[in-house]
Amino acid sequence: MTYATIRYDLADKVATITLDRPDRLNAISLKLFEEVSDALDKALAEGARAILLTGEGRAFCSGADLQDAGGLPEDPGELLDSHYNPLAEKFASLPIPVVTAVNGLAAGAGCSVALWGDYVLAARSAYFLLAFVNIGLVPDAGATWLVARAVGRARALEMMLLGERVPAEKAEAWGLINRAVDDEALLGEARAVATRLAKGPTKAISLIRNSVRRALGEDLTDVLARERADQKTAGQSADFKEGVAAFLEKRPARYEGK
Image 1 (tube, rainbow, N blue to C red):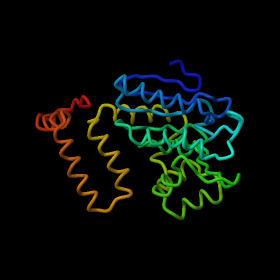
Image 2: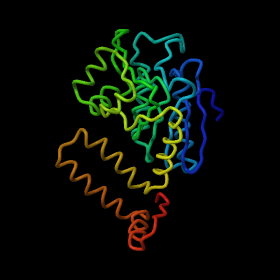
Image 3: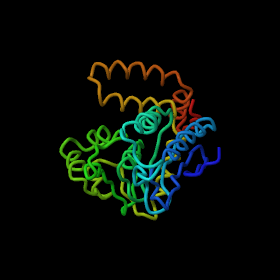
Image 4: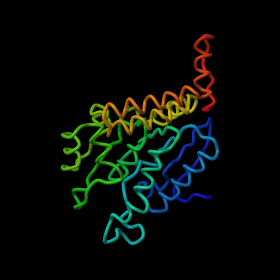
């Protein structure tokens, strides 16, 4: 598939997906989400063991393109059903980790997309904005779940009710993202994290990311039962055997993601 709204590259088992509508600040069109979804399938088919998601130009993603396909339908929820929610679920259920490199503005659903990453880095000049309230809508694409669980009720409501910018360094202090880095270092730092994850024990990483997501809505008894099941699965992997062998032989592990 030839992409019109994104770029795709695979190197060192890291699939880099770049949102590529800089003239529209990488605003979300239906085609963009369709192409991102296709790129995820392509990455898995080609053996990628990590995803790196970023944006081209001065924005990561400015949110929904209100000019796409004639504007929002009478029921904006139709777009959530057809494109936004399925892609959010697809990212959440990936068997490989996701690193996002937020190179500029991440607004509206674009903020949600940034937070779909398991590890989120942002340029110091970047900022996060949930200004749905300013046009009479509510945050979507998982924003209420992602933000509230990251920063707590008070800060989530502050961000969503006031619709004000949260600069990258403040986002880091709040715990909304992992790290704010110098602008010129962003892609290098993000690729280093993605490459490290791609070289790791992929099966265990997959179980960990799924376990943490589910644990946010479970009680301790359920968590303990799932950890028991996941530990059995991880303990039967080739990566576990390699990890133990490397430890005993005092050498770096060479994981194959199996």
